[in-house]
Length: 189
Image (tube, rainbow, N blue to C red; front, side, top):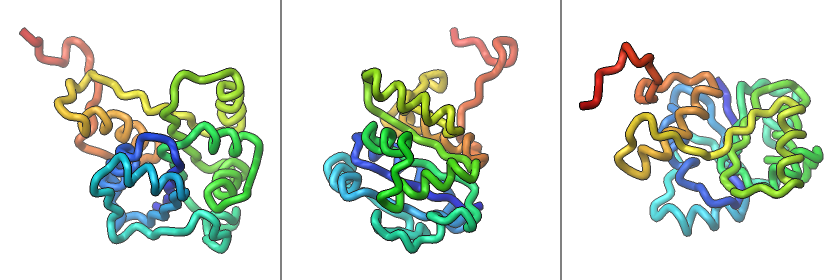
């Protein structure tokens, strides 16, 4: 499968780091576009931010990349973290960078576009932009962790969001916690 992963300047680089670690870039073609602000935030939030060697990196303003054209076939795009500023630009159809143009192409071609905002609370403008993206066919997956799996570390908490992203991309993850019926689960006494 072929994926585009974007990152913008919102807090939440750890979600990007964990996603990159859990996608097998040797088995899938993975392209990464990080805004300048995303790189700055990564330096502040993740002490040793690592991009797997097999991941293809692209400059945010390089419009010669294949995924900015509808004729290039890609299976999904994730923007994690996605700032509300980027989300708003996507909602208005702005294509001024490779990241924004790619998002626009994914929407027009009816391909999977997943945006992962982390900011809260939302104002009315942000809520309307989210509705616009939902109406255009995007998946809005706020970085809201779950606690069913009884996470023991920050990475465990982050992974509950990453697992949802992987599910949306159609990628298997055997580590993902799956809810079971009350009768199937052992009691916790």
